[in-house]
Length: 248
Image (cartoon, rainbow, N blue to C red; front, side, top):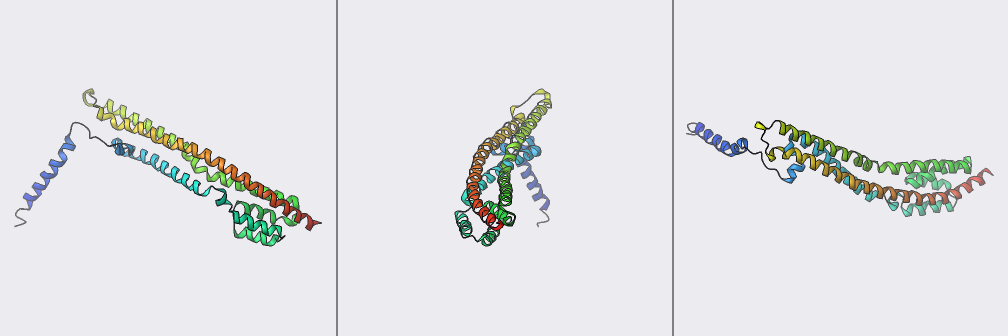
């Protein structure tokens, strides 16, 4: 019985699909798109989707890294107060060996700097200060590099937005050129125009907050380096005094 009516059922299903899909396939006007679809570049096809996806992923990465910097680029996070107190206690007691072991067990920008100086105690006070100064400059560079992803996003975000803008305009003019009978329906060019404008918007959304964030964290990093530098200088004076006594 089923086999008898199999072809009839398939025919009914096929007509059903045709009834649903025909308006979309043979409509004179292109389909309308929501703001979200335009933001994803869907009206411009796969190339628009790829372009917008890259820009959006860049913006997501930027804001994620900004959150990471808010969490980690802090004085108490980079050099905890208890670390300063513990290391200062070793140095005040003259336990340089204990201080060096502590520096190796709790690495951060302060302990690595002081550890570099402690390793040169036998070479005299000048060697202690030079080694610590060199290491501290390296630590400052590390902190600057930590902000590097923000600068990269700020640099490439607007360029990617400009690329999307140019691509959208090229698509728009190509659509106008190939319009049948020279009759251009506004919906025919809406995809390219949407890609052009939204690419610009998203590129600026990346650049403007990124510039502000970089300025904010750069100033915070400078404040951290300056404050830790004062602690380093104080500790090095004591260590250099011990080094001078050992040489004498």
